[in-house]
Amino acid sequence: MRPKIESRRFRKMKNNVVECLVCERRCRIPPGGKGFCRNRMNIDGRFYYLYYGCLSALEPRPIEVKPLYHYYPGSTALTFSGYGCNFPCPWCQNWALSKADPAVMGCDYVPPEDLVLKALNTGCRGVCASFKEPTIHLEYVLDVSRKAGEHGLYSCIVTNGYMTLDSLRDMLEAGITGYSIDIKGCPKTYRRFLAADPEIVFRNAKYILDRGGHVEMVYLVVTRANDWEECIEYVLSRHHDLLGEDTPLHINRYYPAYKYNEPPTPLEKLLEIREEALREYSIKYVYIGNTIHYELQDTICPRCGKRVIIRRPGYVLNRLTSDHRCPRCGEKILIYEA
Image 1 (cartoon, one colour):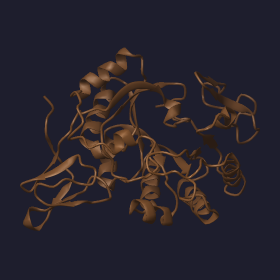
Image 2: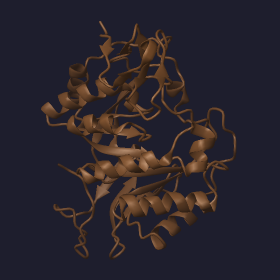
Image 3: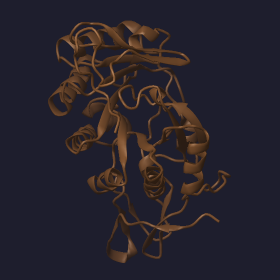
Image 4: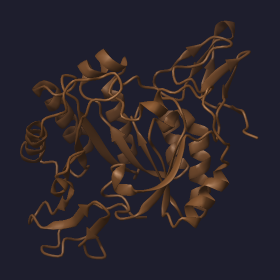
């Protein structure tokens, strides 16, 4: 039977209203109400996570599809997801999961120990919470990560990066070391579409890096939502100034989805942003994703230009030395493997 979990992250207010402290939306929820993500409910002034272990997806997937290119390259992670999200992105690629109400979606209860056992039995090196925002399932994700660590597996998440610092501390302490973080654009993008603040995302990414975690940023370039020059400059400059030149940046192509029907991002636009990131902001590892031009997903030595990790559908060719150096010039390449 799926347990109903009382949340650690809330603040009680007047008239039995609770403020959720799991993510930075900080929903204020009256008795009988649910938060924006529809996974948490105020029951008589006490705050509960209702859908612990209710999974919408569970399958082994290459770590590169997260995308995480510098985190256990070539490995497979057992990837899992629930329902709901704390962001209302109108272009969501996984809208069938993120926009679904968990109250009306059927699901089987999967205890953390069963999930980890499946990871071990399928030859995965780790586990990954993905497909839609994992933060809203904080308690379950933490328990899975702790259990995975007991068996020598890594833990990572694909996230919009909008958790509170308290939630983020819990994640790091539970052993979640890899973070693929979406940056949706500049402040204008966040105000218009999300009622949120990108500075919180950059704050959290820096917090992770400062504490030894691994971060890769993902900039989905959405036509007429975050693709004008001032917006691009904001993303690149904040990445450089706060996260540094070594933090990988994925510049991904948007395609129409859910409620957003602007045309796909022109490849020329993506190439221009990549060139700007490399030349003007000196970001060492810049990739273009969601295209058939797979050579743009290879890792290139920032010193000598040799292709040191080649990624193609179905395989990853890692040419690095055992200590993650370029075999031609000896440049140390950023790779996270504990």
